[in-house]
Length: 311
Figure 1 (tube, rainbow, N blue to C red):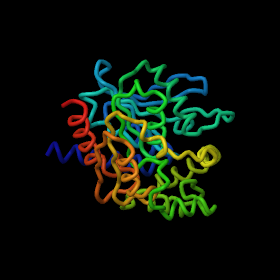
Figure 2: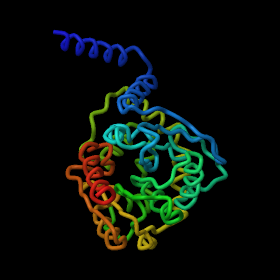
Figure 3: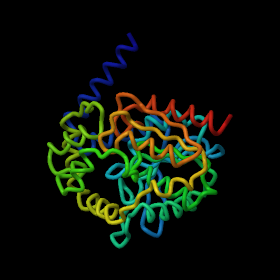
C-alpha cells in the first residue's frame, strides 16, 4: 500500500507540474531531476572566452571521465550514462562553449582546433590530467583533436558517432547540408523538431507538447549561435581522418547502427587509422547512443575501460 501511495503522489505531482507551471520550468525540473538522480552537481568556471558551465559527480580522488556533447546539444545528454560511473570515477560533463549555459565570444572562431585549444584552458582550470575523454559527434572531433594537441594528458579516448570522417558513406543529412537545404538541427518550427528527432534517433522518443514548445523556444533563441558554429566548422573543412594515425592511446569506437548523421562505415576509416582500437556497434540506435541507449552504451564503455585500461 505504501508503494502504491508513493506512485500516486508522484503521478499527482507530475500532472500538477505539467499543467500548472511554465514550459521552461517544467523542462528545467526534468533536467535537474536527471542531474540529481545521477548524483551530480552543476558548477562553473571562468575562462578567457567567458563562463563555462558543467556538471560533476563522483570522488575527487579517482580517475576522471570527461564527457563532450555534439553541436546544438549540451551537458544534459549525459546524466543517465554518467550515473553508471559515479561510484568509480570523477565524472565531468561540459557545456562546450558556447552551448548550453556557457557563454559565447562572438570574436572567437569555434573550429575543432580552436575548441580543443579552449578545452585545454578548461582542463587547466579544472586541474586534471591523465584522464579519459569521451566525445559524441562534434564533441568526438574536439576530443580527438585535443588528444592530438595534448597526447600526454589523456589516458584513453572514446569516439561516439564522431564527426570529421568524410570519406565514409555519405548520409542524406550531410548531402542536404552541403547543398544548402534545410538544416533540421537549426530549429525554426515544430516540423523541424520532428525531423530532427527522425535523423537523430533510431526511434523518435515520445515528447510531450510542453517539452516540444520549450525545445522550439530554445531553438529559436539559440539559432544565431548554432548557425554561427555550423559556419565555423564548415569554413574550417577539417578532415580529422587525416590526423588519426597519430593517436596511439587506447581508443573506443562506438556507433549507433542506424546513425543518419554520420554513417557507421566511418568506423572502418577510424579503425584503419588508429592502431589500438576497440569497435562496438549499438543495435537499434541512432546518432546519440549515450542518450538513446545509455545502459548498453555505458556497459560497452565499462568493458572497454576494464579490458584496455585496467586489465
